[in-house]
Length: 257
Length: 257
Image: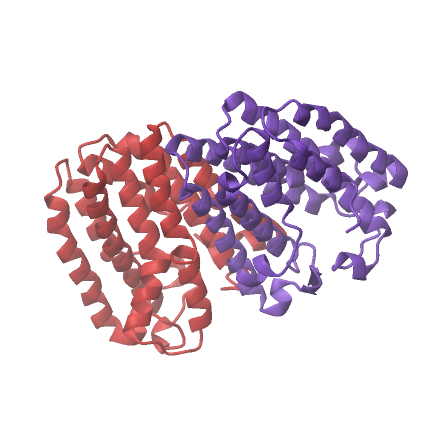
């Protein structure tokens, strides 16, 4: 569990949670617990996605994947335990009872068969098939957008936002997550192993369901930029300090690694 | 997910939750949501435990295991999604906010690295080694006792019990779970495939960490009976109708399948 969590990564999800708290008038550290929970859940999903039966990846964040460093049984169980730790961290968060339950409602909606795990399942079944834009968008919205949405929504709730503001951050987070995934697919299509720290997939070759495969590389990049361009003014209208959240949103869509 | 959940099984954990509600003065159906959550979590753990990298079992409840019926990727992901559904079912339970959070505190304590998943991890590392009684008890307490404890505690909380009563049911559930696991190991040591619906392991041959391996078959059976004999009077002192819970506790220790 420790190897998978502290071995690197950009910490985008906790940063989004903390920036969301700030953007609604809370303090960044109000969202520290829910941010950690998002990172635990994210790392769980990476461990399981990397397994031989799913993506069969040997390298993650420049280091051997958990099943390569240890073994497959350890990878399955460390993933399970990190998933549990994600929930535990929200249940035990230093937040009022109602806020914790509001956060848990966001988290359960994001991670199950209609969110993160369902999106990964769609991805598995999509391998070797050419999907249309609608299916690719749905898959990415579930696989990546849902947890990004929960990060921002839980961050906002932790910072004291009411349900209307939480819903606005949830929508914005979903768009940022989709843009992030599109940028990820574009990187996979153009980068080197040394820049990514993981094996490069030539996803635009249409054997996996990605935006570059459907829209071409330039079309995919334009779609990511469109999503962020639409989201920035929404973030700008929030009652707190939104500049860090806006900067993060832009960085998600225009990534170098 | 459906195949793993509705394909059979004794439903001991939901029954314990509903009987625990009754035993503290609630209605059985008050605990229907938390009981379902326990069964989802239990079925998740079965799917992952059966995987080739862990127990490599082909048969469960008389039918092909999930990875044999479908494939390994589906088994990993269906397990993950059932785990999420367990949490979701408690988060969305038709119970007051404080009760739902009290239940979630029980659930997160039961399922992670110091409970269910941690116990399974100990089991994996124990293979081929002879463990002492202390380690076997700790492993079974985590692997089986913790979730049984949460079933009874969540059932009691759902039935309106305060924290003292919930703690008593949590303790009783842990004992019942340990007795259940000992009886399970005794069955593995003596039964046929047709009675169990899964492959028989000769666990008393000391290549796995079990009570029969440490105490012998008769010693293990005596320990299960001792645990239940100690627990029955505790249950008898509860404010509600405890007879169904007592009958379930006895059935857990003296099982024919």
